[in-house]
Image 1: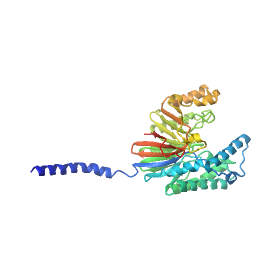
Image 2: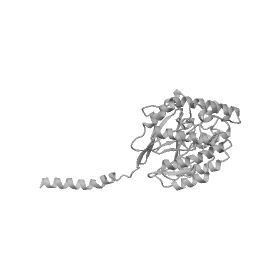
Image 3: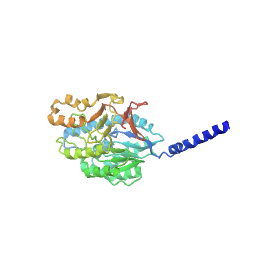
Image 4: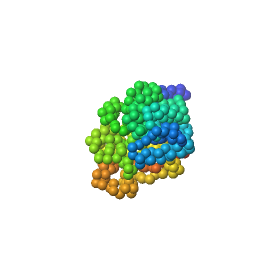
Length: 375
């Protein structure tokens, strides 16, 4: 009789546990996954004649700067950049859904439409084959991707090529430079950073409402960044802050939806967690422009909200105006976390239910250089 009671008790315990086991077995697909990310890459050829023959700029100083960038890129793509890409390829795992690149895929600075399309196609094919041939390779429009002798020609070339290519990569129809795609319960909202279409941003964010996580994928940051020449070049920002009402409206919409911003542009690794406008915005800025040895290690140059946008004054003290300080204070006031590192590498976004984090691999490091907790 005692043996019978023990057996019955075990069977009842097993019955109680079965629903829990079944629930675990029925965990929805895509509840957990990863995305391998590259920041700006500025793909280019060691020989500048391949894509830049015939390139000119009406401003000689600007053209000279761009030509120095050709030399920088050529050196990177003969060595460090290929090491970085090879490292990124080894971040791809069984749970990886796609590879994401944060704009400035190419250097740009092309003489005509045909050359621009060839440049884009060569870059897409290289990254696709070298990182993950069997996964979607998704890129967003960066300012260099739209740059040439005539920026309007380069932009039209990009818009004629890239939506068709993204349609093929994502397996859905993409008709422009602003669109939404999903991985399971999460929404990825891609927007064009240069000359942004505010109505399109609002439409896509409203379409994404109710998603478990909403990722805003954009080349440039939502927050001003610590650079004396380009601090004003953030989403809907400019030197005179003439779009202040629009940028605040979009910022509030981002905050209310607790959006995670994935971006590039600054050639730095930067993390911001901001609680304002009745919600939260988390921004992860990523760079794969490994142009110096020092960028191949995790090198923090600023940490804590009190250090946000302060280094630019050391570079140019004349920037310490009331207007600039008011602009930076507007963002600093609700900033809980700020980290800026002058580092480049590859990144792995990991989504595990409610948890979201990014593992950063500086240079071609085999080990995680830093883990950023986004959620």
